[in-house]
Image (cartoon, helix red, strand yellow):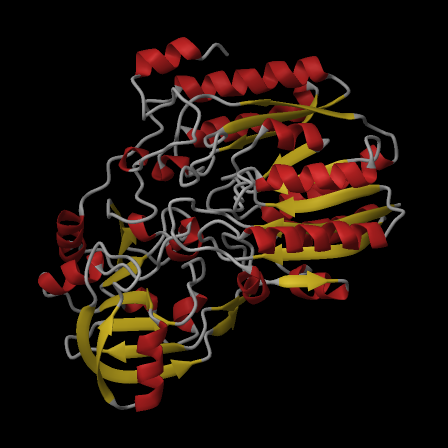
Length: 496
């Protein structure tokens, strides 16, 4: 059996003014042929799972194209057409194949194409025809559309947030693809979508109520279905299909798939009052962090969650830390200009910098004076399972500045989410010894930071990824939907 392997992944924040072009994918990762295995083969990522499945289950993994870019604003129309064309073209060049395995995010938006993942699947389906199996893996934050469910034979999503099961789910998808290609199963699936948006903090699968509900998904073999997924959705995409989804895959039993998907959707709806959170504001959160006995205190900058497409340079929490006379704090900011000034000055030199606040305007740049302690190329390797599954990481040219108060300001030249402690340890820093650490994330950082954190304090900061959906003006999302509309109105529209 020859099964094609490839994918295009991007999480697109439609509230961001930035656009994601071809260079963003070239910087993040854009491989063909043997380059796919070289980059992703050992990674804790679904593509690594595809390749492991090929070795274990005995099929030839035929490489096509794999592209990934850091979450940001929508993909430009030129980049989307170019990359989709390359993917379809590389698949056509590898014909004949018996099935196709794609790694997609599920929340990609392109200019002129709000359902970019659905468009990719539809084009691949047009190429391979109706009979050959097409299986796609999806991020837990995918906004699943009917077009995606209709174009693919099976959609297999991560079941963890932070995402630490990507390789496992990729391997499972590979097994489904092989069984379908051999004719052992005929894949049928159903999609159901309850009308709500889930608060980012409530999407964590290690806490209730999602923890118990995710455990229900493992009842598949006993219940007669092949796979089931609950996807929390990506609320920072103002698209028709934003919000959670329930997908169930069966062996030629569409009735069972539909019934189970609707049951899961009804269960999510019944938990709606628990799928929310009320984090502290910046002043209260910083005060709590500085008073914490268990350190380091991790301040979670929800409004500048880089993994959700934020600016990565908000100074809201840095300003509050300085206002409350913090010492021993670590703050990372995206600021290429500050990096350039540090590089020009050199290690051991005292510099005065206006850091951050150049993209995120919720707070002004902060003037800091300190000694340049480290200049680094920003590259490091993460060998452990971490959110995103990226093994080879690059935060761009990076500088470490130590202030007289003992605070550490890290400035980098590529927006880089805090999914690995390697972001800090590669610079010679010891995050476990800090008094406070600002992480620009929501939940994804936990796989790396929770083991060393003494206290964790989510903070309701403003920004492109503010945790409360009510902060945003949605224009394209389906209505009525919670929490944007009155609950009685939404409940009356939902009949699971």
